[in-house]
Length: 88
Image 1 (cartoon, one colour):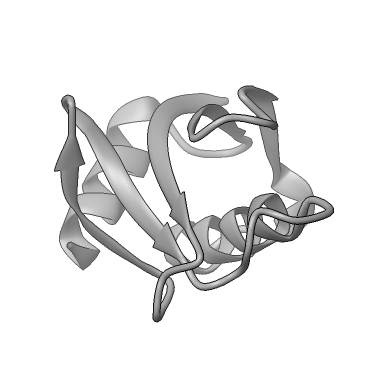
Image 2 (cartoon, one colour):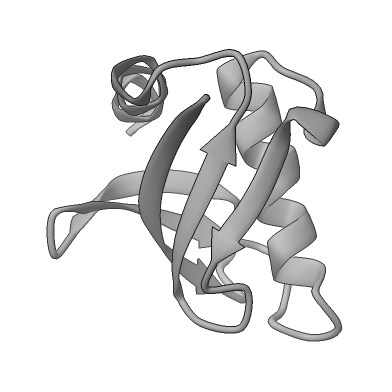
């Protein structure tokens, strides 16, 4: 299982990875930070980018903050980072 720390910006115009914020991938999320909508959008986005089912992704830390540690089953840390940076 791979882990990555990401910085999320909810309420953006579209969901995308836009580079780095304090050394972490910065992901803009179209969903608002209400009732877990942004967390669900993050999981769906990462599942699409990483090519894994949404059930393979979990938010370990930071569910209520902008900085989140995410675990992705079936991929290494390096592979997750590579796939995210390829989309930025």
